[in-house]
Image (cartoon, rainbow, N blue to C red):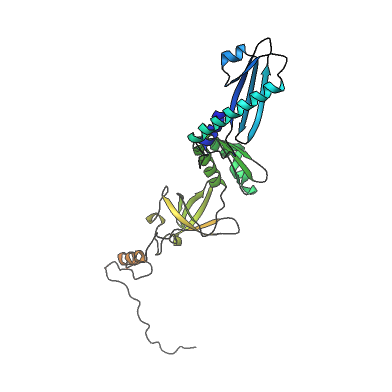
Length: 296
């Protein structure tokens, strides 16, 4: 009892009160003379007539257990035994309180954890995966046990804080719902002429249209991103078909106002400006010449 109390408090378990236990013994002769023993030891238990275990807090007794080798004990013997047990119990509690006066404010990192969280029931299939592939992958990687209820309640049982934390983070990542306006980060998975696909959640991709890559005209997608790049993106919207549209240029701090100006200075003949001729001189549109009256 004493060791369990100290272990729970040291682990950060918020128990209501400290509890301690003491074993009481009895030595009695054939005439009925007796002696109550406090803190019963092995030889005394072997040769004695009683083994009375008393556990409790400073407020009173919480548990009793007694073995006797004689026909029984008198009320007087029991009264003496409980009185001595109380005195010993309070002394033990005082020593324990000096060692650790209150439970630690936080659970020990090595203490087992049981964590519950709620997910959208529609996301249960994503958490389970085909044939249980996803949930088994999380269990194998973290060592945690995961139980999923039909209403979306998920219980994570882990041997320590780190294992539980990893499992919960993985579950949240797998089942997260994309919200327009939030900033996410993920790898570029595919490149097209019109944009790039970015994995914003496990098994979920979003498209960055080429016009959303930079605050200036981009000639080629690979001028900005390539497959494997880890980039931040902003969720612009989710269309009626559930497709996620992303933006790179709208990510705060990604580009400055000077970036567009520097690009235009370096590319004065972009598609929005004048292109040079083969001879080197820029082309100009001829001004409209006056025309004569139309004939009908």
